[in-house]
Image (cartoon, rainbow, N blue to C red; front, side, top):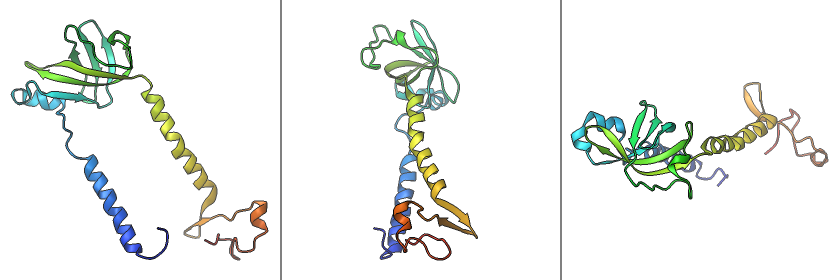
Length: 178
């Protein structure tokens, strides 16, 4: 994979893969948004809506949940006898302001949402923070080994005791030999 044979095809394949992934991620979501439903209420009456755009709980009362979203706060009514899934054995009353969640609701006329399913994500922020750590680690490793010298990125030579015994580690200019 790392040889120079068919280099153009490999680079082209990777670029094509990146273009396909960008197209796939920007496809239309299968669920309409609440804003779509309010623009055309007759068309979306009874449609399922996914509430997934970084929803945070603002307020929970017996009959509704007020959720913040980029478009503004959304009130989701809870139907009588609702026993939605939200993390294993928890109840809707366990939701607190500031909690993250994911929900599917049904759009009802004249313009409100009725909760169909909900899943809490109480540790979502920690998950995002933890997923950043490997990126930071790779960045620190690259900062330790790569420098910008005379207009080029140069890998620093290995200065460990094992590498100092070998004469083929770097050339006269100090550049690392691959």
